[in-house]
Length: 139
Ligand SMILES: [Zn+2]
Image (spheres, rainbow, N blue to C red):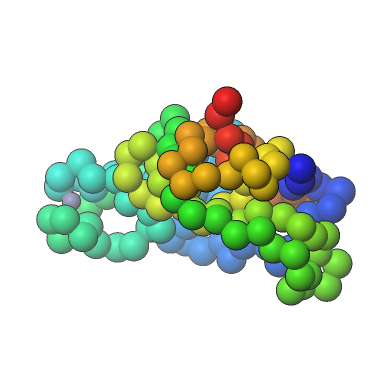
């Protein structure tokens, strides 16, 4: 089992930019936000400026329920950053709406991880101004 919480999250913080700030602001409010294309309705993340389907540059941030499936993962055993506590699970989650999200899986045993496993979002406050969307396996 592992967990990501303020007491032992010693990884470098995400780079918050004008392009991804609504994602991080949403996380602070326990809301998972992705871009939704105003041309074709496709959801996308990360927040690239152009839709891959219809090439529209018009999009708006929208909240999604945070349900999806485990697309891939790795268990990190070696601390690549000073002070990082290992092991922890780094994963790619495919949201039901389509986008792939790089994230951490919490509260899961390695033997329960499998491609296609259903997951749901959880929010971990790391600092006063930083909350991470992470995921947990759904029983
Ligand atoms: Zn589109």
